[in-house]
Length: 396
Image (cartoon, rainbow, N blue to C red):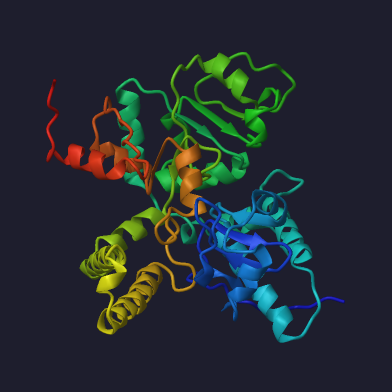
């Protein structure tokens, strides 16, 4: 039996980095310690009706590592937003029509459909790429600033390369539009298509000339040529490049991560209304912490009432801060106090991240990014005061 359902994509529903529970069909955001942000758990397009169901299922808010690895799937790349939205629409449809289903089968079928859209026997890139190529201006914006930045790098002796899983026809059409020239290959010392990442990083598959398909071994990268396949070890040997920073949109595969949503989140955080709410939240939490440290002898009915009011207000402000980014799931990068699971993976896998690689054009080419000092809870008070200059080092 086949069902034809006309869903319309809602770009404002999901965010990147969510987790889908194969056993329950729950879509949720978790923090860097795998704790569930309860008010983000959705079943279909609706928040779960009783969060105690989640707490009872996991015996708390924390997801055990084994369960996380075997029964949950994180949607972390650029395609995850439509994928999460489609999954939620399907779950909602099945619920509304009282149809029996298993959430894991549903997820598997959606992923399989996505693979069909992305791949093709003819190396063009599948139905998705074919549709994009019909009217590429709907999906790409020309980027003279990017072209200027790459040209600046090359004029100053830097090497540049393009490494992609996409096919040559798709990349050629897209780069010609993006750079406004058919000579886009001249922006790079080396261009590699059909790289098959992440296999590129662990396989021994040799490089092959993509312009003139043949069976010859690739012993060097020639200017103006495009190559396909290959592996990281041969790439290092053929280029002899000692230090490489590779920017891409997949936070788990690229040393430098490009996260377009970052610009919007920073814009929201810089708004006066958001900063005011955040300031008030931190003030409320300081007041609550201070009040809890008082002796029980000082507690009165009036104080208890005031504490209850502060707790209720804190809860409301936290909801407002969450919905400032996304009504259903909040910020991509934060739960409440903690970074999100997605943000923690960025910090683990990416040396640097930004909304656009051209942001680096504001810095000198020899600029060094020194890492910020990370504080443990028992270090924070003293070391932040030291860093602020309020306490001076005194030698013995």
